[in-house]
Image 1 (tube, rainbow, N blue to C red):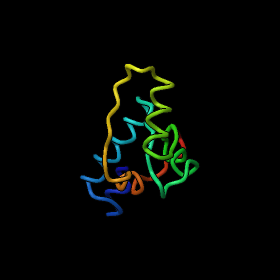
Image 2: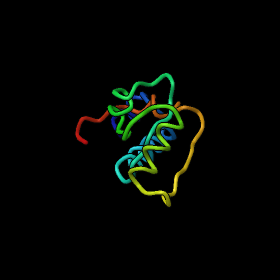
Image 3: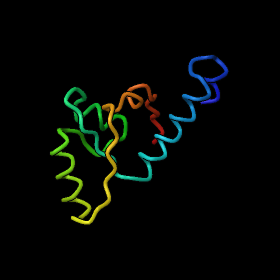
Image 4: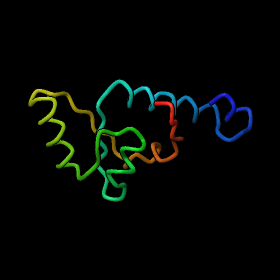
Length: 89
């Protein structure tokens, strides 16, 4: 990421966002509710799966239990599409 900043490929702000998003994907099970991003593409970015909002909520509650805490973020993962894929995961 430092190399990307030095080469002006991304801004420092973007790197901070990318880093935080990467940490969330590593520490939590995150589903993406999207009509345009395929499950395969979502999994490449580290999501546990993709589908309609109803599908991913059903899956989350089925896997985590009916008392699971769920956060919903609008914007269909716009920032996630800008996140580089790091193969060292």
